[in-house]
Image (cartoon, rainbow, N blue to C red; front, side, top):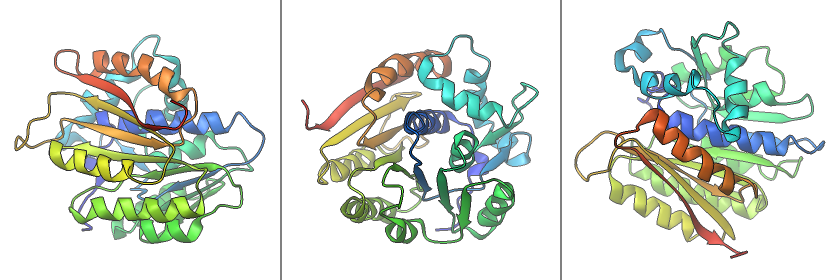
Length: 282
């Protein structure tokens, strides 16, 4: 349960999708003067050296952020994400990849508040050290689902919650759904981002159906594939993000950005999709 370490995968195509959406939502919340709250249920270590043996062993970032970092004229939706990431690579060369909580912290104002949970002992210690001295960000060594339940509703009454476990165990799927069910009772108006990998297509589809069955009025599904998913083939063919209560501009911006990302990351066999699963306005 506590064996997963994201250092092997930092900056891969799934991170690009996940963090592009997260930073866009954070930027959207920044358009109002009122403070916002950000909760990251599985914080990882927060900052990853791409020259570390972990990152070099798999090289996944080379087919992810490295293909986007130097691209010319990226779509507007990617600008908040790339700007936040540049704060960790001041010389313009891609040395470090920042995780969810540190990316949002780089964007946040003094009045905004962020919490990141991490239960893995070594990852927690690294996250604590990487977050040291950064305003507004509190790091806890807690189960992300239990901590989320206790934290909601936030005093700010507006914010974003990122739920992205490793999905090492099948039990993670049920835990995600139940955590969302409880969270929505406490903070129905929040924006929730639920990331999921597509390794076994049937498992991913089942998770999506369970979340779509929750009492949510707006649910947008965003997917990025680097190859066609095939049952039993192994490896992550792609990933998706389910967005509960998305910003109204997200759909159109993703319809522009996702095809561009496919061309950068997997031009020969990649694909993408933007799908409303629930839309009370439709």
